[in-house]
Image 1 (spheres, rainbow, N blue to C red):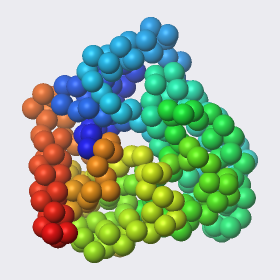
Image 2 (tube, one colour):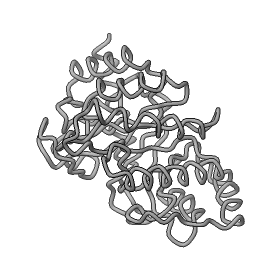
Image 3 (cartoon, rainbow, N blue to C red):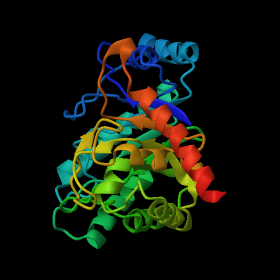
Image 4 (cartoon, rainbow, N blue to C red):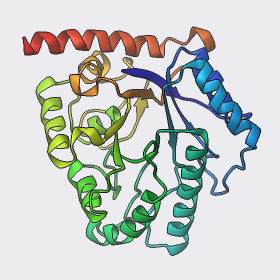
Length: 288
């Protein structure tokens, strides 16, 4: 398993590598532009080149680019949909330029339109974006916590979208532990986690799972509230060992998005590694 964090790209996109190297990560996630503005960032060619070189030097083995928060491919507002698609195109272009392995995005919210009608809006945009993927760069839908009319509260909803684009070979998944917990999947319980991963395998195939977001939760199980907490410090707590230690996750990048930045003294990735080791022991004991 690879371990990393979502870090800032302020001061130049290559600074993301400097920052994740400082905290001991070998995987990283970043925004390619301000997450709360539609206007894309124009990255200088020398910054792109430095990103690739620093990645090689720092031995960072996975890079994810997270789409901005404003994206809503299911909006009834044509302008919002077009802006969302343009922003995702820009993210895909930058991700390709820096050699990233994944672009992670939230599909959005149908805002009362209804899921079936929303799928008809999302499908053409998804097809266009998937044309921008490569053998190395995948487009990954992230599961949602389930608040309001958000899309992706269940694997069943995400599977409908995958079917709508004919199971494109480079459409992947990002699973967030906090979102799964909020939507009712007890990631701390081995039986519940096995059942959820069995469903994922049946609906998608485990090979489509490309990225893990490892976040604790401030909200109770099944609350549909997306309230991240530091790894091991929230209500899931030590139960994240069960999540991190599952054998199906071997080799995947585990990215925490909520962490305490203390520079070289940052402890969050160390806690993730310790939880992973504890979880591996639990799963070995469970399986005999």
